[in-house]
Image (tube, rainbow, N blue to C red; front, top):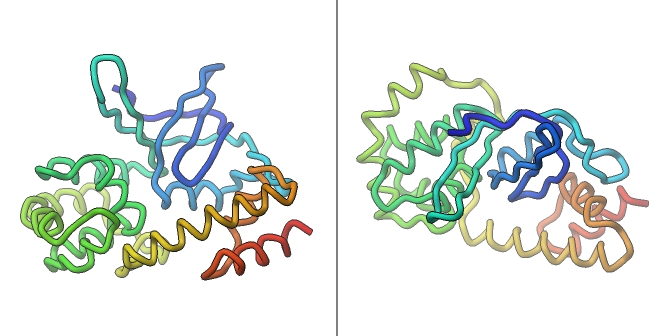
Length: 217
């Protein structure tokens, strides 16, 4: 079992990271929360290139079949443990677990489960109300042990109590893709475009492009 990966960050996108450990590149699927924290820590240089800083991602390995497996990486151990807890619920797999943790922090998820806030949990992309209800039922008795082990972080970034509606999240993802393609077509590298977009504010692709160009000029 791979408990964590500690090494040099060589590639980073919103869904994936590659870490060089002794000359071997380990790839991991990551949550949006982990991506945002890595960017905040300085994952990108002003030029837009990956900074190759040293990072540590806590991991969960899922066996896909006899010949392949997938690694999921998280900035904090608390997020990694919650990822595993979610998958103890029947019908909740890695994709749904990652979707929930990409928009709802472990602390906020604990609060939602305690309060049976099915509406809040079901707003994660691909998670319906029945699945959210099952999460509340199955994990309610496990949340106290989680909080006892990790406590509750006092941070606006991880303790937010609301998440973006799934339809809005899908729209933003599409706008981000369109803006990225436009910036690359203008001659910027993908890394430069991703760095600018990570700091850009806007509701439409056009707004994201303008905000990104103001940083790139």
